[in-house]
Length: 355
Image 1 (cartoon, one colour):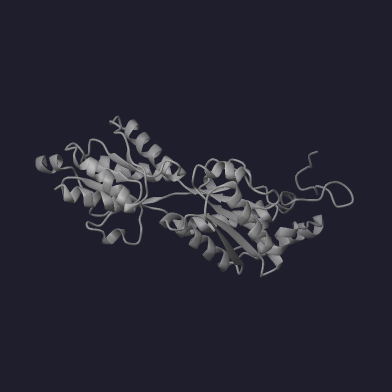
Image 2: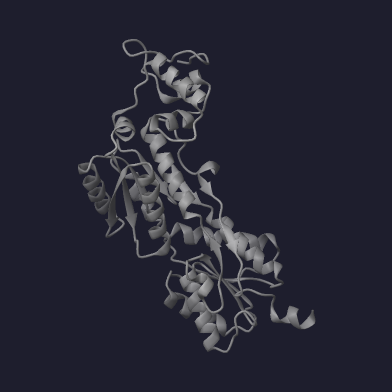
């Protein structure tokens, strides 16, 4: 059944109960604006707020129970399920989500996963449901999270952060492939013939996407694509990969999947007598707070974790308020990374000698 624009979708006791999109259509605004009015968010003009409130009254629109709790009960909580907070990325996302929730005057309850399996996630959701959370943000960017996400309990609004394989859930993410492209292009623009890559763990979606962005950039530039080395997130993983790369005199540029692995690569190269960046340029990913103080200061891809957390919470509140939130990845929920260029990258030695 369709309804003409501006007409009520039906009242209780008659046709179906109105939903948020009906309010948005009648008020002539987006469903995000309706959600912001319901959530009491600042930044909505008074005239717009009054128009939305009038449409709510005319349609007799009533948010679902979870939305009412989040809108009217200042003690209503948001849950966060997170895996491996020992790593900079998940820990930074958790912090950003917590801060965004608290800015809205809500409580946040966190369930850390000892293992990324269906049983552990089910236990985490059971724990959060006992605390009467209105919705849950899941931070589990591993490939094995896909099957787990599909087994989530029904009825709880859920938003995934960097859950790239879960098309049935709204996803908020950083464009990891673009970040890898930025750093690879930077190294090619300096004059390096190609860029070697120290990869992250193969079961992590972020690592896969960084490999994909690096590989596509080299291919599109007509450059050779060396075989990636590595397979972890730690400085020890980078050190082992750096020892292999140090044996190849043709290696002049290395892109490491994160900053700790870059640190390990630098140490291995220096021990082998390869100077950074005089002989080999090294760049990382994440731009950890210590990156400017590495020796040399590390060029790295910066992820905007505060924006990521804000998007995750705003999307969850839209979802729990009854908005028709698109599933999967969409451009408006994808955060653009940037590149912080420092002294660990420079033109290759052949270029410097001939310039």
